[in-house]
Length: 107
View 1 (cartoon, rainbow, N blue to C red):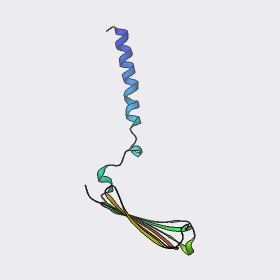
View 2 (cartoon, rainbow, N blue to C red):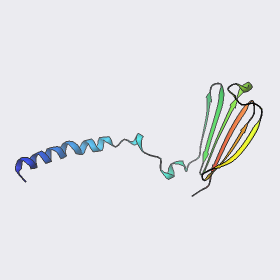
View 3 (cartoon, helix red, strand yellow):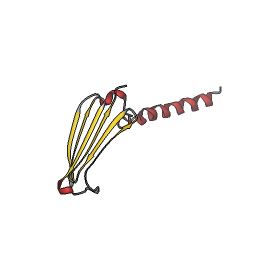
View 4 (cartoon, rainbow, N blue to C red):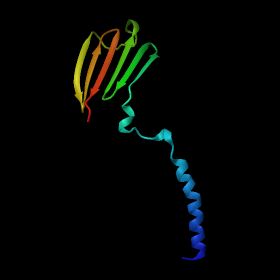
């Protein structure tokens, strides 16, 4: 390899190496298995409905409550349960409340 080719290779390496480290951004990391092991609860107000979310290991629960049926597009009351992969999903709806509960089995 000539001196000129070696110099170009060293120069390219010096430029490329720092850019590889700059590209590693913590905000773009994918979820890992242990990320959901802690418990959390999030209560917020998504007008005109109140949204509550809870998470425990292997379990996720979301409850949406709308006052006076605002935002409700369904007629009457109904319940539904079904399996979605390893998770069991329960849905319950009335004019005032929509509840969704998801429980997943540990792997």
